[in-house]
Amino acid sequence: MLHKSFISNIQIYTEDWHVTRLGRLTSSKIHVLMAEKSLTEGAMSYIYQKAGEAITGHNTEEDTDIVEDENTAWGVLNEPEALKKFGHYMGIKYLITQKIIFNPKGRTSSTPDALWIIDSSVLQEDCYNVATVEVKCPRKYHRFFPLFACNTPEELKAKYKPHFWQVIDQMSVCGAAIGYFVVFNPTFPAHKNMKVIEFRKIDLWDDFKKLEQRKKEAVQTLEGIITSWKP
Picture 1 (cartoon, one colour):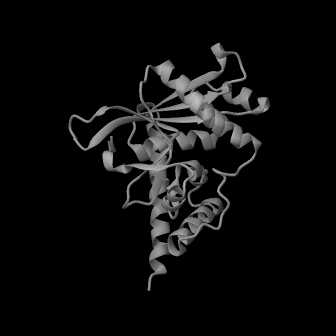
Picture 2 (tube, helix red, strand yellow):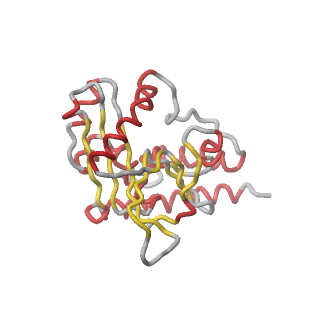
C-alpha cells in the first residue's frame, strides 16, 4: 500500500525533482547496493555521495538518469507512446506518470515511469493499492533484441541486474505487490514492438527481503555519516 501523501506532484527532471533526490537513495541507482557482499566499495561510494548531498545541499556527481545524448533523448521521446500502448494493453484508463514518490521523513525516493492506482485501501483510507511501471525504449537494435528476449523477472535479473533491481525498488518504495517492466521500440511492427514483464512480490519475496536489508544497512551508514557532521 502507498500512503497518499507520498505521491508528490513533482515532475521528473525539474529543479524540484533534483532537490528532492539530494541525500536520498534512488531506484535507478539501487543496484549498486546489491552485489554479492554488503557495503562494497561501489556501495560506499554511492553512500558517500548521498551523504555529501545531504550535508552540503549540492550534487557533485553527473546523474546518469539525465545525461543527454541521442539514445536517452530518443527513449524519453518514445516513453509516452509506450505508456499509452501499455495502458491500452492492460485496459487502464489513467496512469500517474513520472512523479517522484517519497516519504518526507525517509532517505529513499523513486520515480517510476508510471503509477497505476488500482483502488483505495479498504483497511487504510489514506492509502492506495498501486502497481508500478518502468519503461525502457532501446534505440539501438543490439540493445533492443536481448532485452526484448527476456520474458520473466528471473531472466531480467540474470541479464540486466540494474533494470531488475530498479523495478524491485520501485515496488518497495511504493508499497506495490505488482510491478511491470515494459520494453518498447516503435520502429518495429506494431503487433510485436512491446514486451511486458510482470513482477509479483509474492514470487520474489527473497529478493525483496535482500533489498530491504541492504537498504537498511545503507541508510544506517548514511545517517551515521550525516550525524557525525552536525555541529
